[in-house]
Length: 235
Image (cartoon, rainbow, N blue to C red):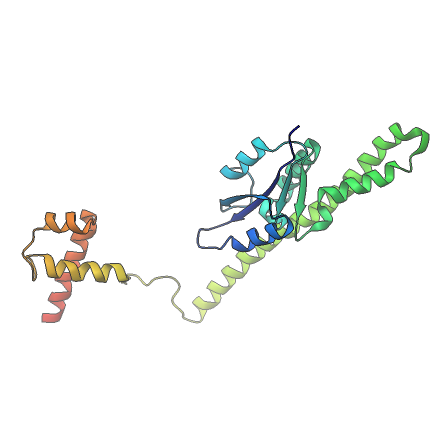
């Protein structure tokens, strides 16, 4: 007989963000949880490759742990739909920051009511199930609405911050015509000056490109900038 599995689903919006906190929180809840990681920007569930793979292999009795409801979905309508599809399939859902909408909480409330039905249990159960399903949807919708609102508020604060900075005369983004100097470009240019016969060395362009394993366009860009810099110094 197949043993139920426990998964932990973690998602960040950009590679620059850290996913470690989500993993730690999930492993604190269940250290044996199989961690599924994803980098995906957007409020909707559709389009997430790792999430789609998880949905295909998840079985009744399995559990998915999320650090928060926003990791599953930040779109209320879609989140509720996914929640109940998984619930009806027999999948347990745990939201560490919103434990009040865990599927076990919903199921326990239903079970408590069933015990009070008496002889007409079967018929009454249908009404109770529908009633508590609606109550659960309201609670779950509040959680997803909050997650969606947090994203909207963040975007609004970002827009307001940019506008405030602009009104105060601050430069937003990189000024037109400015160049960004990286440590790698400085190192490469120093090597080109030392190796190239156009400067202090005796090697051809092709030889340097092969040795430094640098893209041809990048090499000639550095070489052009070196010449421009030399010309500026002589003016």
